[in-house]
Image (cartoon, rainbow, N blue to C red; front, side, top):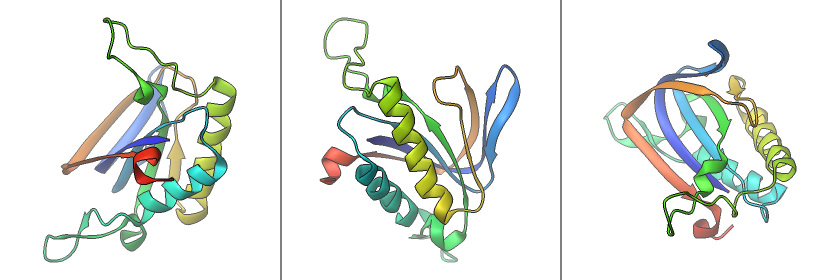
Length: 150
């Protein structure tokens, strides 16, 4: 799995100009799933994200996690995180999971998150979505479970 995590003051995702998900202070998470990912991978990645100390404490140091601040999260599936643009001009997405696997593991990841966060919204898997957000900091972090050893 791959996740692009952005610390936000607020974010929202829309489909055809209708807001389908939003969050206030917390994280906007773009999630990509590979075919060989598992529920265990999803759980490990969620735990890593939930406990990352990327929010400022009273001294302005990044010392607090999403758990510490009791923040919100908005999770949106994004298979394009598995784009391979090494050859030619059109990216290949062969590393991304099939829609069936991707959808199931995206929902599993959201289920794990929902167990920790009372205010969690998500996009619609496979839909054409528009995302608006205010990146706080800016703080953007890239996580890949293979690089993390999961």
